[in-house]
Length: 233
Image (cartoon, rainbow, N blue to C red; front, top):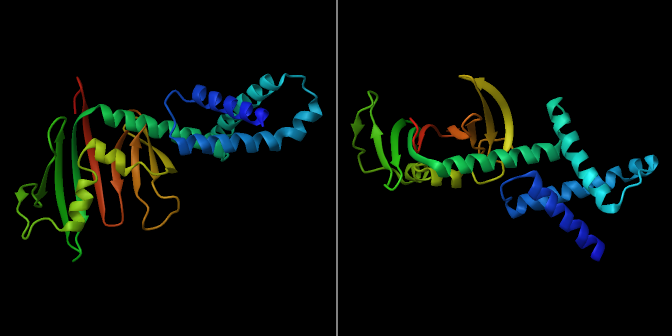
């Protein structure tokens, strides 16, 4: 029993060293389970080589091997759940950190109403002030909506109207779809749904700034611009 607790403690230490930011509890648990599975699957091969290492040293060496080999496999285009999991977690934490540092955000949203008509909205947010949300005509001018904003559309707008709302919107599990090159930076396209389908929310992350560039769902899409303190939008 004490041995198991000691191994769990060493896994926790490894995770803290591997990632500089605090991990969400569910993510840390997932990493722990993957390390244990890899450790058990590698046991017969390790015994063949008769490597004389103390238990603590063997576990540390194996853990480093998992991380390094995972990175090499990922670089060669081979899927590796552990490496992909760590990369996704680090990217997500970096995005949340940059969203928290934003001082200004604008958002252009196009939403399809229940009657099939598309309506454009502009959202402007400044730190310390509530967001300003306006409906726009084809020429970009402000228009008044007859009867007010429909409830279903209001829910979408409220979920992306500030960096804090956007962070909450993206707080689920991420899945990498593809990576592309745009304006000199890599852009990762992710989905916030575990499975592909109409319910999946796709979003693009600028890997130079670690900020969301766009979101796309079944009936709406949005693009974003930001300003951090001392910077330019």
